[in-house]
Image 1: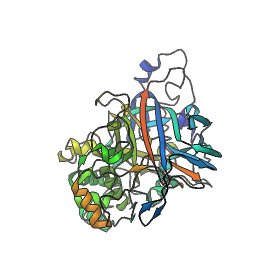
Image 2: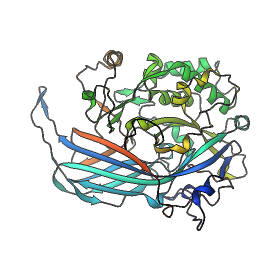
Image 3: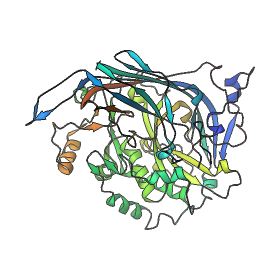
Image 4: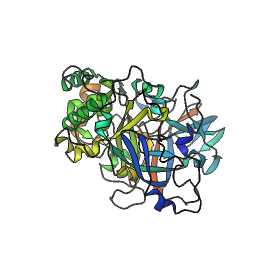
Length: 465
């Protein structure tokens, strides 16, 4: 299948319906993605991310003594990478309206983002992710880097039919995007200190499925594993740090610096910790069972928190697993992504209800129209680059875990993921200060198409095979 920056015509829907009240009309429309997933009640958004990096430190150690520290840097060239989500189970991004501005020391060096859509030769990036790449050339005495990137898109509510989904059998072969989800992934298969030992997780999945994950249809196995993971792990920490890491002492901040993600090995052993370990654990369990799945990170713009313009507590994550039915006559309906908000499912103890009852937050989710998707990964690990999130121990138990398993002393600082990365030549600073802010608003109605022209015809808003 031919791949373009637009992915498919259905991905960004370039049609414009003029002379109509877009909001009133949108409320009446639905989008049948497949026989078991329907979208309804779309809401359009304009989403802005501001990234600031400064206070560069180039540290050279001799006998544990810092011999040089600089607050500026000089570079020959570089590229800044930031994730772009083409579409999820519930949302789509309009690539004809992606805007970005990159500054070094307040000087604009790039205003034309390059959207990277694959890894060459048509090989999709993991989970079908896209990357915005911003470039700069030789600069002397750089004191700061800032990136502002704005995307436009649409989010929908999802309606899931479990009975119809249960009719989909295990496929003999998966499309390339689904296959990419079984590649080694940072914070799923490996962490900052090497590969995770997932043998206990694989054994637990076999225990949960009585030795045969494929004894039941994939949709049923996916729900059962979500129930078991919700029972096995309880989020107890915020899962994010502010821009000055440990000095925040876990207090809420109005800017974001990094995610605290410890991986599925940690989650299964300890049973509690960062809320972002919960979707990580579920994805690892799905993949161990042979179900293609990925983490999706998003921003909940309707969540009532401190009503600040940018609140990092609005960052959330869920899981999407793929159901593939090659027998569908309509090629656009063969691959369907089903959202599982495992954090909300666990928080509300929905996993305690009868298993055969349709469940809120498993497939069906009336809150997704209020969530902007940001990324499929905590870090764009498949491109060469670094960022400057610093891991923060949220309690003594976690600190002891790292000391016991990796011989990490409490004063050892190590990286935590923060969505972006950059590649700087001849070399990036060893450490720097960084923060990100997020904001959502409603775009002008003339700026984007109000609704997809094929809303009633079943074109999926997702990365196609």
